[in-house]
Length: 560
Ligand SMILES: *[C@@H]1O[C@H](CO)[C@@H](O)[C@H](O)[C@H]1NC(C)=O
Ligand SMILES: *[C@@H]1O[C@H](CO)[C@@H](O)[C@H](O)[C@H]1NC(C)=O
Ligand SMILES: *[C@@H]1O[C@H](CO)[C@@H](O)[C@H](O)[C@H]1NC(C)=O
Ligand SMILES: *[C@@H]1O[C@H](CO)[C@@H](O)[C@H](O)[C@H]1NC(C)=O
Ligand SMILES: *[C@@H]1O[C@H](CO)[C@@H](O)[C@H](O)[C@H]1NC(C)=O
Ligand SMILES: *[C@@H]1O[C@H](CO)[C@@H](O)[C@H](O)[C@H]1NC(C)=O
Ligand SMILES: *[C@@H]1O[C@H](CO)[C@@H](O)[C@H](O)[C@H]1NC(C)=O
Ligand SMILES: *[C@@H]1O[C@H](CO)[C@@H](O)[C@H](O)[C@H]1NC(C)=O
Ligand SMILES: *[C@@H]1O[C@H](CO)[C@@H](O)[C@H](O)[C@H]1NC(C)=O
View (tube, helix red, strand yellow):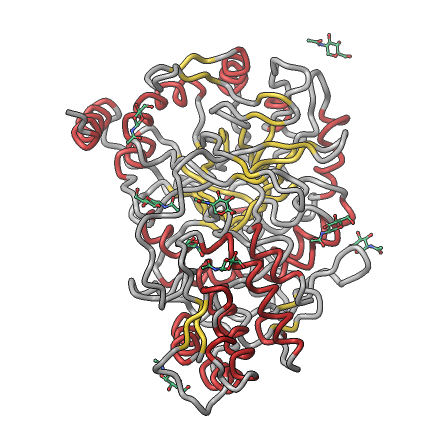
């Protein structure tokens, strides 16, 4: 009989015997550099580690987005299979793009730790678990999902950093989403501090023109209050950089971006690298990335990718798996990267004692190509949004567990109907360019929808038909028949407009789908795979796992 836990346990014992008893050291940030516990400089010599998921082509999205993922840290057999190859490569870090916080990760995380391998873990999930670039918001369901992942992983000693987003912003006009990303960094950092976690907070950016990538990076590490506080700053800026193709030179491929980041205040590294034209890759960039021209600015990088990853630009994987998943065959890219990584010797400069401490400058000014407001949205507040949802007169109560697919169209419908009766969806909208955030904007999408439905229902003298929405709405029999949705929005959320240290969600809290829903038998998620790599234009090769909630986007776009 198949017994994954027994395999896992046996594996853990073997590892702990073979790897000795040296616990993995703590890596900390001093200013713009990372340091080992002994004070020597730490560089990320890493590889992306996630099997590619199914993608969902969407005519409205510029990129095909992953719709499912395979948690690469939940299968001890698979980690056991891969660990010798990661060790051959000589990596000290893997980057993982999505995990399932309800699964057990002990075997993989302990095995990696025993092998001296840290993890940079992205907190976002495909489809509805990430900040949507086209309709950005920082909401209770996202914060709770991030917190659940942090709580699942906080017991491991080898989490180097949590990324709060990957390529959320992909163009200058997309910089309106930055205020929500920075709020995510602020709240994630506050939560980690409250748990005495030393894990760093990162963001991984798509590469782009310095005129907006440089202010984007500065914005994520700036202090909007102007008092040199790091409380809203990321610790780790990742650039998904594919500028070095084939036989190039530091001067030709890296000097530009290195110059752009020469004055950066927190850690910078390549959160993905490894142009695959020409193929196979020779990894000439490795000595340059860890060489003396780069190390004053960059702290290493993540080679993309261990598992096969298909894109318009061809294949990126460094191994192939047998069809039954039992054996790994490394390819030429793997052998070449192994050679290059094993030749790296880290430049131990500057010493930790001479590393300047970080300072947090004022934020970049808004202009026509950089649109981010320095007024951040509030910390999402579960209790306040739950108070509102419970009191609303007409509640989203879908007959399907696939709520993500219908939220967008229903929001469009409800908001346009509300408009016809003199109401407005302004309270559920947030604008990261003007810095104006509706009082309901930090609530999860289904509470926002219930709010819009309730407004329409109330404007129609509470005629039950005005709460039907094709069978997606239910009149709340417990609700007041005199107070309005707007009144409850004010009373429930009045005190929830600022920032606070988030707490772990209660297990009964509303987290994305309607709290009133009686459905929910069966999951709408099919564990699949995770990653797509695409190309934006001839020059820049884009990274993976673009965050996008397809259906919700359609809805909120009509509100602006
Ligand atoms: C996480 O795993 C559980 C148990 O297999 C599954 O029910 C759930 O759908 C998964 N969640 C995600 C987001 O994949
Ligand atoms: C940014 O502009 C491009 C091209 O004009 C457009 O396709 C895209 O939807 C815009 N993105 C956002 C987030 O507004
Ligand atoms: C906007 O500001 C950034 C620096 O913050 C600058 O690089 C960019 O050129 C500016 N754009 C315009 C149109 O002035
Ligand atoms: C790389 O380019 C340099 C300079 O153009 C050349 O001397 C060298 O032989 C090339 N190496 C390979 C492996 O093609
Ligand atoms: C774990 O990975 C192995 C190797 O790919 C595979 O055979 C097995 O089915 C996986 N187990 C689960 C529960 O997915
Ligand atoms: C309904 O709203 C009132 C007033 O804001 C609040 O005191 C009460 O707790 C809410 N009810 C629920 C169930 O949250
Ligand atoms: C719910 O809303 C969706 C999207 O508008 C619609 O397609 C569906 O027919 C509605 N009714 C039910 C019972 O799902
Ligand atoms: C995503 O949607 C599913 C239902 O379709 C829900 O169970 C889950 O909580 C949502 N996740 C987030 C982060 O909102
Ligand atoms: C949810 O609905 C969307 C749109 O109808 C569909 O593309 C997707 O496959 C559905 N997801 C699941 C898990 O059924």
